[in-house]
Image (cartoon, rainbow, N blue to C red; front, side):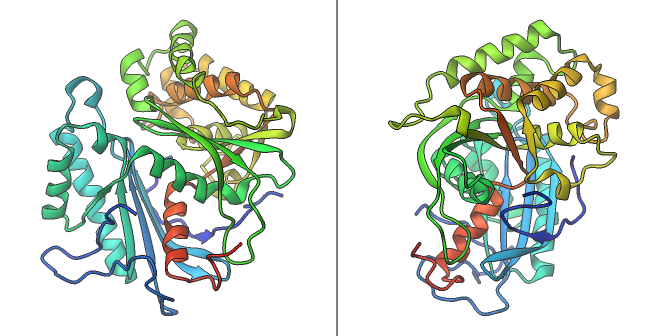
Length: 372
């Protein structure tokens, strides 16, 4: 599902279905800054925002402008760069991965420049947190690309993903287990129903959260991702399940029959694309779609029965995900066993959308955004 072409659209509740130091957006060698901090006041009508998420596996960018009580995406970029490749064994971001990151981030910089971005937040996650040369990598990106990355902690990552996905919570559900399967870590969040919001997207009601030390890259490197047997797959599930079982979803009980799962990651969007038999990945059909327990199990069984070459040939998987998708399925399966909800909603949105919402709220884009 890697896609270097722009995707545009609105951020809404349904698509086709019912204070750390902030990174600065500047050109290399320029002293000017477009970042504005909390309380900066209402932005001018021409304000353009950008959110960049440099993960263990992907480099992703969204550029958007405020629109009504939400925002409209005007440009986007996504590329699998595998920044965290080999970190689990070497402890360092490799030179090859740095080169891939420099290439992808240079494209993001040029897109932000072309779109006239006035405020941006550029975050990096698990690979930069875990690598012993993470600070050196960040300095090199600032020097060579002219972008200053903010390495966020896991709690911030979970909160931003929840902010981006809250519009997809079923208003009739008693509760939601949100999960974000990343490349180097995975976050689980217990969400309650949000109070109605008159101004802007709803605020997430986070009751509990946890971060698992597993992602698709690290798990596939440890267990193998090319030739995956049912036995090796089950070993992955059991390893993750041991950590999921420690997650306390909060003091108030979760009524599973009336709760649902909400997944944001390449794993769940891939599963949805396979389920829908898409000839080409289509975000408009995937984002917000519902899958039953039986649907999810059926897709996982299909993937387990495929050879590596068959996974490569699937248009919703491809060569860049074929060795990672079953590791992602194992993480999902561990979560499903711990929280056997009847329904899963798929989100092709998350951290970047959460960043955009947070910046616009801070700037007072939605009048009265500080109140519910």
